[in-house]
Length: 313
Image (cartoon, rainbow, N blue to C red; front, side, top):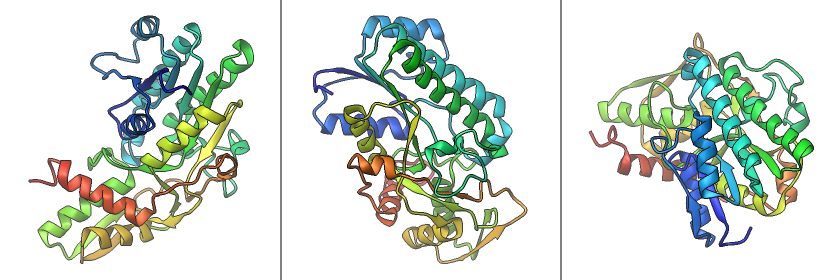
């Protein structure tokens, strides 16, 4: 991937997109093209096609998505399915029409069956029912993978897909209504610490096992895939390590300095019981993550304190 090539990062203001922009800049890429959602609504097919015709990017990284945690996925399934489906279709089709040399489509490990054998291999896709709480988002991401695979088979497009595990990082969403588990815990524990709460109640049983990856590590893996990888289907990206939600809560409490007792509410949904991915494919290409979970959480908490309006109240 030549340094002077024009690279379009869709979703550059999100946690993943901003990490990609940082990584591209650090690697010496000078032609990184971005647009805010106000400047370019990727749900608008005509506007997306016109943008590609005008800018003519050589490479595309599709990191734009509507994302959220269990609660938001469960209460707005139509929005999650429609927005992610139409954005993926518009970007992939515009890239195909305008002969983009290579496209990287980023998805999520939620594409896999709820009870997939662990660690989850890429071949597990579509071998069983999805987790109901994020089914809509998963279906949209699966459709994006299939569009890339079929564009490769039918039109010879070098379109690839990568499925990361649970991500966290700088610029994460710390909303209590629609964030993912790790940033939500950081905010809840920070606020509980400030209030001096003796007890903090969290959703679920605390027993589900999860794998986490820093967005900056995903960005490095993405650049490697653009340079070295070309195959149908998708490839997993993850840390290869897992811990329970209860263990994660204890780790975050230690970083934040919350001294109270943590109680879990098993009447609330847990989501998928276990989700550890087989990352042998990406490891064989020479990539491994460089950020430990403890160091990553500490860095994200420092970012939250410095940048979040809620933390500065």
